[in-house]
Amino acid sequence: MGIEQTLVLIKPDGLVKSLTGNIISKLSETELKIVGAKIVRVSRELAEEHYKHLKDKPFFEELIKYICGEYHTRRVLAMVYHGDNAIAKVRRIAGDTNPEEADPISIRGKYGRITTSGVYENVIHASENPKEAEREIKLWFRPDELVERIYPVIKKTEVREVLIWK
Ligand code: UDP
Ligand code: MG
Image (cartoon, rainbow, N blue to C red; front, side, top):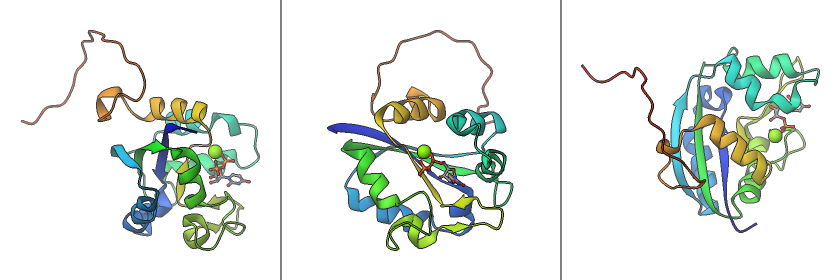
């Protein structure tokens, strides 16, 4: 509780179904602030790290393919929401993990489905608790991609090749 931040992903099925606007509108009911947002091409490495706590589950391989976009489009919209009680507020509007059990007016209840192979294509990810939120936000975003210093940072001099406009 208190001021929190949470990682939200609009998963590849959400993007393919053109649900971005609907989902962001629904989440605006929370009155939380978006402090970062970007479209990400999800590598297998990122997907496995994100879902590492589910590595032993029978659906893990299908889940990785799903989040990498093999069945839809190879991208997700990653966002960080910030504000009072952010984690629970977003989880409540997202709905239960299983779209068939989710409240029908929640995002997952409205737009999710269960595939024939049993994966819950539930259109949105939302962090479960503050520890996971911190781990996930630090995995998906660099500090300079967020407009608020939500976690402590240090300065480091780094030489790396970057692309600039020609
Ligand atoms: N998932 C699934 N079958 C399950 C449990 C989870 O397909 O029995 C998928 C679903 O897409 C879910 C994701 O794996 O969103 C991560 O699972 P988790 O238990 O962390 O649920 P969440 O936190 O997303 O509600
Ligand atoms: Mg989870």
